[in-house]
Length: 112
Length: 114
Image (cartoon, rainbow over all chains, first blue to last red; front, side, top):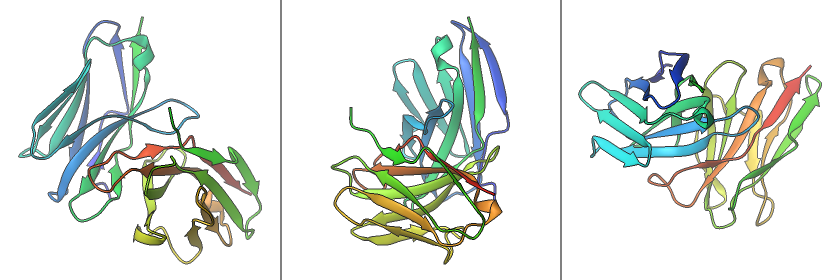
């Protein structure tokens, strides 16, 4: 059951540059998407969300883009900061329930 | 800032034993969830709970699992007879409302079954 996929297990970016994290999904019933950030020994922390009626949502340095036809979303972080180093999870929810389906995560390292 | 808390942070138990994982959700939240993450794998939904009953559960949440809100603040996950494959990080989450509300996660309980 791989309804949400994050194909890049890790990403390294120089401080100040843009970080782009990608996520693909297969279930056309998904209508709400979130990104969570997770530090070691902590629970996931909500970062940003997007509803399927939008194609972009921006919050400070974080922007999420949704391409419904491609079933693809991405998280852009600009400029990247060393404190952004964490594992980022993409999650999606179907219009039939409350449960989130998580991707496997992408470990982002921002190099000072 | 309000947060979800979980106890214990680490639980070691022998196979076949019962364990209870505890969570205190954010006080004004109405929806409660359990997720688990087996080491190296993705976070998986187990169950959601609203108005004192299970509202949704995954195929992982079989008869060995149960949830309870024994009082106005705690939310518990019980595993009746633990198996080795139950070893995982268990996350509790809560949300103010359903579907359009973000879920806030606790720090997790690491369960090790030996």
